[in-house]
Each structure stands twice: as structure tokens, then as C-alpha cells.
Length: 513
Picture (cartoon, rainbow, N blue to C red):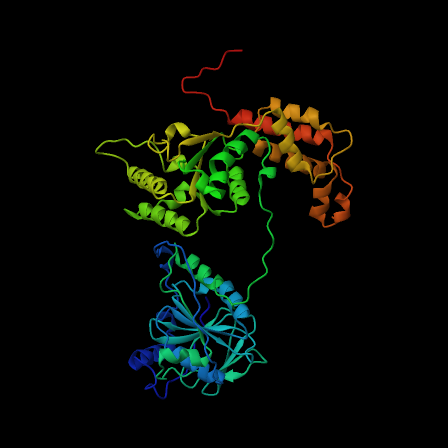
């Protein structure tokens, strides 16, 4: 952040400012060009950590808007500022919010509250805050400069630059902006803010991992109240999961039908374990289950619930299951569940994660006891590591195998991923599906082969060269077809990759040639 020194400026009347003596000290230092002794940045801020928890956001009611001048609005909001709070001003909330996000590196400290002042006469956006707890400053957030005047001395505040504010300072945001001044000496009742049209965004009860992440998340959560149009996202269904007909049939009987017709299933497992090698489609299958059933769907990786603080991991799991109870019928999908549900050691020196397993066992037993319409789907490729108590009947008592696809499955998965591609007329799908099956590929491998084949076709036709030199046009790929050799090269690459990833056991001795 650039700090422009202020020289030969004095405060005629300090009675309007709290801690006036400290401000006079700052003023004298600035007059001597010693402004560096009052830095606006804490260089140690990157080490500040705060507790992580889900963030919710509520905006205070706007109330009846009083017809106030810009000076009055800014002075009202600025007079009640506390450390780590800012006044954000701009023509519109969306514009000011975007400018603030763009200028976040200049705000290394936690922003706990924002007072937003909206005025159509402003040409840009700026922030007002307190340095060292009591020295007011104004920071330009826009490309347009802020014009300033103190005791008939003019100055500019460019984007990212900061000036201390004095009682007799006058400012103007941009060439077309309306002049304004700021008085910090008002006696303001915070309860009367609703009448001013000043909107308050309070983040004091919200936590995240670092200051910058927290500020970004809070500001992005600010809303004008207008619902944005959401892009329609294609829902994954069983039709998108190829080569797993048996697994789909089992999961329908174990999850879909009990969710839809709970009274027909008096005794059932509330947990299902999908077991299979990486890339076979376990996650895809779980997402399809949620869409096919219409249930609430919570997806997470087991390690996302872990915390270094004692007892917090178990609390995270309790909160998760409580949320599922509130939104039932619901499905909780835990990917790589073996990371948090390993076999307990059963000794006095048991691991920390044993407590997590105990908590998970209790929560699963509660689902069974209370008869909640909640199902937990776990996914693992290391089922031998799971705790025995977790996979008993009533908990994760149903183990569903999700293997590599058979010959027909390879053809189905290939058709799913190549349906929007233009293949040459002499390409033999059945023959290539047989080659995929013989190579022992999984669903993820087949998807990669199709994408790599298209890449090979682009290379063969010089498409990437055109993109590089700026001569590419979409008409270049309208008639482009993927040839058999493009698929062959892609399959060879996958086979070589799988071969190189195989690890020999300890003690293995390669045969001599």
C-alpha cells in the first residue's frame, strides 16, 4: 500500500476527536515527514489464524431511509467506527463490493464490520477506517483519483493510496463526484442507523482460516437482495453411470426404495459402503443416488471434518448429522471414509482418531434407534482398514462392490463420454471397447481416453498452433473428426501410465535378462 505523506497540515480544533492528544502527535510527526512511524500495515498479519466454522450471513433491515446529505451519512457512519471496522462508500453496492475485493491486499487486518454508504453522486469507491485504533484515514479503492484539499493545499489520492483525515479536509471522488467532508465528532446512537439508509454488514461472529480468506468470503457474501439467475447444472443420474448395473440395482434396494417408502422397511441398514478401486465411479454413483431419490445430499471427504483441537472433530460430525436430521430425507456421502474410520487399536494408548470412530459409531446407532430417514454412503478402496464395528448390520452393514467395468460396461461408458464427439466413419466402437476391456481400464480411464483422443485430433490438425498464433476460428473444428489412430495413441498412453504406476513389493528381484 502506498501512503502519501501530508505536510504542513494542522488540526485547529481537536475537541471533535477522541484521543486528541495522540492525533496531535501524529499530526506533528507528519509535519516533519515522519509519517513512517505511523504505518498503516501490520507486517505480521499473515500469521493470524482464527477458528474455522461454517459462515452464515444476515443483512440488517434497511428501514426507512432519511434524506441525508453525503457529508452527514459519512460522518454518521465514521463517528461510530471501531478498530477493524470500515465505512465503505460508493455509487452502488455491487460496484463498491467489487472494488473492495480488488483492494483486499491493502486490508491485512480482519474486517469485522462494514458500514455501507450509498450515494449516486459518487464517481468511485473508497473506504474509511481507523489507524492504530484512533487515527482516521481514507483509502481510494477506484481507478479514478480522489481530489483532496486541506488549508488551501490540494492533493490527489490514487487507487490504493491512503490519507489521514483532518477536521478541515475536503474530498471529491472523481472528476464528476460531489465534494464531501467527514466529521468524526458526532454523538451517534447506533440504534438509529436504520433511519439513515446506511447498511450494516456485521462479520464479528464469523470465522475462517486466515484474515484474507475471511475478508474475501465475507465481502462476497454481501448481497443487494436481488436473486441472481443461476445457471442450470446437469444432474447426474443412473443413466450417466455406465457399466455398474449390478451396483445400481443393489443401491436402489438398499437406499432409493427405503428413502421413498420408509414404512415398507421396518428394519434396515442406514449405511451403505461402496467398495472399489479408484476411478470406478463410486462418487458418481453416490451423486446419482441423491438425484434419483430427490433427497438432500451432503458430500464430503472424511478428512474435511478433522481438526487439531481436542474434541472439535467429534463436534463437527455431530453438527453434520444434526443438519441431515433437519433436512431429511437426506443422504450423507463420505468419500475415502477409511481415512477417518480405521480399525481401533483397543489399547490404553489408542490413537486420537479412535474417538472419531467412536463418535461415528454412536451417530450411526442413533439413526438405527431413532428410525430417521437418513442414509450414509461411504466410499473406500481400502475396506480392509475399516473398523469392524462400523461395518456390522444396522450401521454400514451393506457392502456394494463397484468393480472395473465388464466388456458391455466398457462399451456403455465409452458411448456416454463420446456421444458429443464426432468420430470418423471407419471407427469400430465394438473393437475398441474390447481393447479397453482387455487393458483393464476403469470408468475414469475411459473418460480420459476419449478426451486425450480429441487432443490428439487437435494436434494432428494443427489446432493448437492456430490457437497459439491467434488465427484459430471455431469453424476449424466444426468438421473435425477423431480418427481411430487418435484413440489408439490415447489408449497406449493410459496403458503406459498404469504400467509405470505399479509398484513391486518389498524384496522383489527383477528377473535377469
